[in-house]
Length: 182
Image (tube, rainbow, N blue to C red):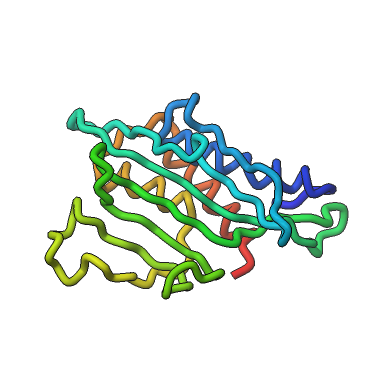
């Protein structure tokens, strides 16, 4: 997703992310805040101002969903659209209403922890606290937001908020794969 200006590239990047979020979140939660870049050019993107968003399950129970991402605007080698956005880090998570982690997808190449490659955590909501898997960083490769949004619908019984959610996620994931750089 490229643009003629950095702002246009950011808008082109955020548009499918908002659509993707709307597949599981009510409209008023689908606000993605991007703020201003830091000194290194990184933007912080958070869903719902950093507060977890409730997801409704078919069995009436709820889960909470959070999205945090860092991205930067870079030069694109596309005539007429010299700028594009590239993801620099992400943290996507699903937890219970009691804030017990179910699953989270992390990638932080800048190294806040010991693992800087994409990985998944299985939380105490699905793994016994004494289990070996509790503190593992399970390698995943890069995970798209579309895949993360699809997961609670297909695996955890979350009710989709859009009737065309499957087509929306498929289309937006195709865009992600087209524009990703690694």
